[in-house]
Length: 121
Image 1 (cartoon, helix red, strand yellow):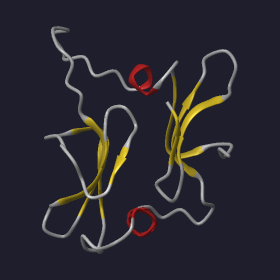
Image 2 (tube, helix red, strand yellow; image 1 turned 90 degrees about the vertical axis):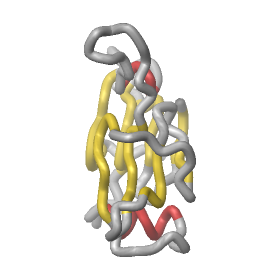
Image 3 (cartoon, rainbow, N blue to C red; image 1 turned 45 degrees about the vertical axis):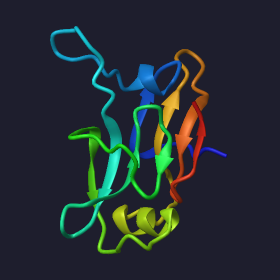
Image 4 (cartoon, helix red, strand yellow; image 1 turned 60 degrees about the vertical axis):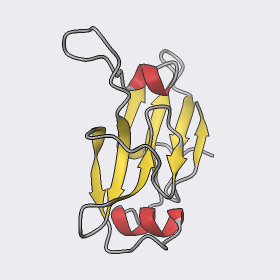
């Protein structure tokens, strides 16, 4: 179940791709950048949320750059997805991290919760 608000971003859109467009500045090609990456002390990407909203731990096909941001963890590669999210985000209210809101209805079409579980598309 989605929360009333999101910690990082709530974006309007029919889907994840519509909420965070991946078009290059010249409009020629799609970038398909990760939305979020969680990195360790050395800058290694441990977990990524790709452009479709899928969560990958360990990181798979992580991109050079993100649409939303990189977030730091003190944990290592053996940490679970929930542990990485708990360490990377100060979120005592356990809000969703990201949400896609259906335009004109206000309902949540996609959410990434505080434990790193994605629901919807």
